[in-house]
Image 1 (spheres, rainbow, N blue to C red):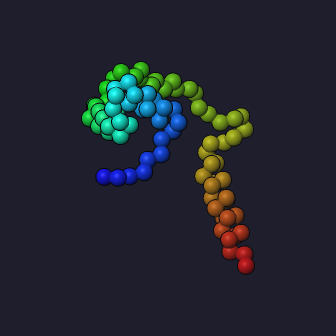
Image 2: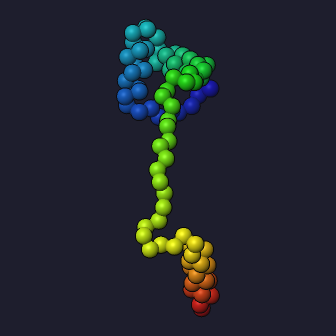
Image 3: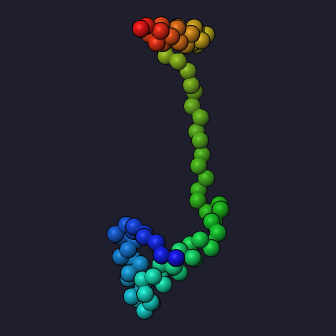
Length: 86
């Protein structure tokens, strides 16, 4: 199958160097590298686990978290009034 492929310059150089060292064509080398990459299985558990560190949440002083629903309602009404104006 014939297709056009755009490679980043550093990858193209590495592939050309590898093809030269192997004494193969660029096409053969590219096909081999892609084939081996697709056939390899990802190695699970090799990367360090990501750890989430919790921190205390909260609102700034003076913000009543019990009135947030009222704020949302007020903003929705204001958006509706703006949208309803001709």
